[in-house]
Image (cartoon, rainbow over all chains, first blue to last red; front, side, top):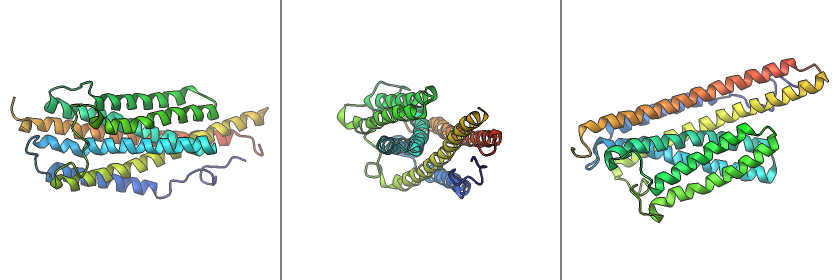
Length: 236
Length: 53
């Protein structure tokens, strides 16, 4: 029998997640303020260096979401559990948002440093390909009604997209690119490392929050679909 | 054109942070709307289901 939202034990409860969301935003405000106000200008780039505190964490989180997509897509194909598909889809949506943000922030950083908004550089192009794959993933889900087929096709596209992540990461080493080498704590000046780490954690916390809440919504959407089907069968 | 690190570049930094916040807040609003709509859809669908079905 279908139960109300609060009494159905199969559906996720908000629990402490709203409070966790508030914590995420406070942490993000603090880390961004620290990056903007306390970080000293770079010798070559001056204040432009501060874009690193949003561009690099967004790129890292984008990559991480695709690892989540990869894991849950394989898990779905192996165990055929619908919840795995819903987690993968939630992560893909969050990943597409962060991927789009990474591209836009890269363009904003590229204009004053390279003199152009966009160039068909290996790093930029491979990131754009990744973004398009994830947009296709989301479009595909909207077009297939059968949940099992939708999950299978999504898993295939999700795995394909995630395979592109190491290519994006290694592109600056494999090809001659305008883009600098990967910004890691080991490749940036030590005085920028703390702020970079703070902002990376802020984006990580936010990613977890977004995926969890989107997954919660996906479970309710699916439960509503099933309840509508059950109601239609009950009326026959 | 001045050095890359000239004061004029604050406009790019400001744009980058504003866009980041717009995306983050925009996505937060989107997720909460989707969640509220999904909960409502589930409640409506449950209510329309005949008892015992």
